[in-house]
Image (cartoon, rainbow, N blue to C red; front, side, top):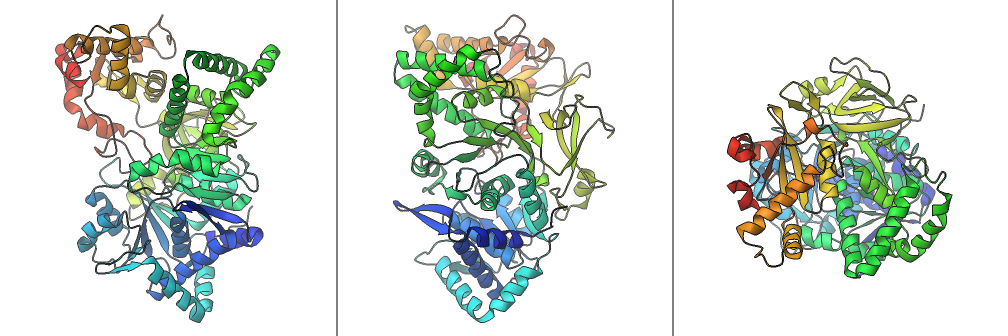
Length: 635
């Protein structure tokens, strides 16, 4: 059995091993600055000393609210080296209530916050009497009551460390593997979010488990695009890169989230990463950006690109069975790679080896696409309660459509509705046991007892294992099954993902059936693409006219009907599962309206509640008609 080490032991070990090699890259102004492994550890200890000087006791909580940047990593290390518990908060928490709940529920004594997020903290400070100090990760011209700038905070730490180094070391070394490291709050798909308690050993164990399936080379660079508050970016991001002697780079923070997003392409070109973490929403954006760029180069280039793509997808098959008797395709693979895909890869800096995808199911067509262009996007699977990695595909070990090989060591089984283990190839709830399983939910013994039974974590996700139990297929949420009027249960995610990935006219979808006479689909249309469709197919029609809007709705219907028997996607899903009515929605699902969570996943329950009237209307004779007034008004 592996040695049960803390994050402190882990950082000490690898900062000593890789010493002065670069660990963090951060762009300030126009210059990229590098911080070594040793300096990362030392700067973390300085912040630990500062927290101790302010009175932080072992086991007390500190909330951390900041964009992804070097000081996020340093601040987390500071909290942990001081024996504290980090409460990482999403910068996407806009509502004061959401932020207030987490700060108060965790009993955070201090808040560490970036200047950009500071206004949110100021709004709730009067309602957080237990918060003694707000440490701002930037230097400002002036501060309000309880606030302190980073330079003053670092100076306090340096002075305290000089006089009390033995005490700081003693505090760090007093931390045990089962002590809490993080309280990682869920996205709050129910009334109140749950605080996932992750220990030091949860983290170090999951990094070790991840190494059993994914290889990172020494010197590899990862550009971190995902929020650092989620444990996926923790484990698969900076702790994994630290273990293997790689480095991380952060996207320069803009004046607002949109400005930061616009910095991503430049950061990719300047950093030239070898690996990135992704989620399906990012994957789709990357693909659309590539295709838009190709389309701008004219029909000849687009035709060559499509030929190259078709050849590569056919050659790669499901990855594990690439090539075979298709030896005649191999010369074309090399030719097309030189003419087309090598140039496409320049969009990703030219050194990318692969992506690791998580957060939600990655459609098989997206997996085939990224492999075809020479940068595989490997589907993985996990959840916060498992710190989070449970399985992943990887270079040389992948089956498209699967969620990959299960990490080792880990016990896994698939259970039916009654909690009994089922045979391989049979679907049921994914249940796991291992050192990466959370300690429980903070202040929530009832939910803990429902989720962890006899040491086994019941994930709430549905899937099945192959006979050798090496590869896992995740097929959707165990609890988000739709129930038809005859009681048949089915998972909606496959159709939803296929429709949004396969149609440029449909941005987002949710299937709905709760023992109703038929299934309906809620559709967020791509209005620009639909207008372009009307313009190209019927240029004489005014795109704002009712006639144009009816054509748009018929196009949406056509895209959905392609899944029926005889259609281009016929046979992918049973006809009885397909929607009989379409509700076209006036606005997209976003974080602002609360319909998308911090990991960019659509929150089904909230969408159904938000659009309750449209769902009810779709089950009326009038609402079942495609060209109803509500649909007309929404395109």
